[in-house]
Length: 394
Length: 52
Ligand SMILES: [Fe+2]
Ligand SMILES: [Fe+2]
Image (cartoon, rainbow over all chains, first blue to last red; front, side):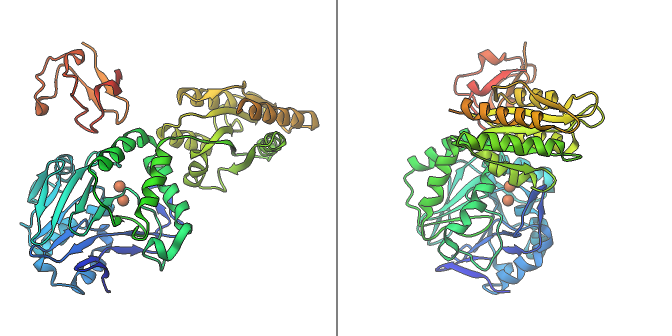
C-alpha cells in the first residue's frame, strides 16, 4: 500500500476504513479514514496514528516512503483511540523510547490509556519543535473535541494538522476537497453536528485564537476524510457559521416513532400544518433514520416537534434514545413541542416535554395527545397544532 | 463551601480539594479563585461554572 504524497516530503500514511458503518453510534454510511501524516526531515516525524486494527496499513504506507524504524518523533494531536490506538504496537515495532509529543492533557489522557512507560513529551500551547528544515508549532485546542486535542502547524509548508477539527467521516476515491467539491460538505456538517455541536461556543473562541495568530494556511489536514487544499478557508468559514448556532428560521423537523401508525399519522398531519404556513418541514421516523442523521437535520432546524407513543406507561425506547443524544449536544435557540398517541394512560408526550424543558428549549404548545387512532377531528387538531407552531416560529 | 460544576465539560470544582496542579490550595472557595483561573479539564473560564 502506497502513501499519498500531499506536499514535498509530506505524506498521508493513514488508513481507509471502507467498511465501518457504526462509529461509536454515529452512522458512517460511506466508511471513514484515519489520517496520519509523515514528514521527512532531519527528524522524521509521524503525526497521529490509526485505529489499532489498521496498524498494518499504517506500517505498509510508511514503509512505502521510509523504513519505519527511522521515525524520530511522534506527535499525538488527540488521544481518542481512532488516532492513538495503534501507538503502543507501533512503538513496540519501531523503538519504545521514541518521544511522543502531546498536549499537557494529552499526556494525562494517553497515560490513562496506555500507562506511563511511553516517552511522553508534553508541550505548551504555542511551543515549537524543530524538525530540521521545518518547524512544528503546537496550538492547544481543548474540546475540539477532547481536553487533549491540539493542532500542529507546519510553519514552512503552511499546513495545519487539525486532528478531528474540520474532519468528515467519508471514505472514497477522492482525497482532496477539489476532487469531491461541494459533495463533501454534508459529511463535514454531520461531523460538526454530532461531535462538535455542544462545544460550539468554545470552538468559536479557538477559531478566533487561531485567527489572531495570523498563520497563513495553505492546507488543512484533518484526521478524517478529505484534506482541504484548494480552499481551506471554506471549511473555516463553515465552522464559523455553524458555531453561531443560528437555525434556519423556516425549517422544522417532526421526529417520532410509532407502534401502530397512529403517532405517525399525527406526525404527518403536523408536517402538513407546518407546510401550510410556509415552513419547510419533514417527518423523521426514528427506526428509519439513524439518530446521527436526525441530529444533523435537527442542528439547523428552528423547531423540533417530537412524538412518542406511550409504551408501558413511558417513552418509546427509540425516542428516549434520541432525547438522551440530543440533550447531550446542548441544543439552543430552538422552539420545541411534543405529541403522541396512547392507549389508556398517555404519559409519553408529557415525558418528551419534560426532557425538552430540561434542555432549555422554548415550548409554545402543551403536549398534544390522542387516544388510540386519530380520527378526522384528531388529525385536524394535529394540523392546527402544526400551523400554530409555524406561527410561533416567526 | 459549595461545589461548582463546569457547564462545558462537567468537571466539578471541590473547594476541599482545590486545584493543586494549578496552584490553588485545598480549602479555596470557588469565589476566591483568581479571575483568570480556568477549568483544569476543558479550559472554560470561571463564568462558565454553576453551583452544583
Ligand atoms: Fe475524536
Ligand atoms: Fe477521530
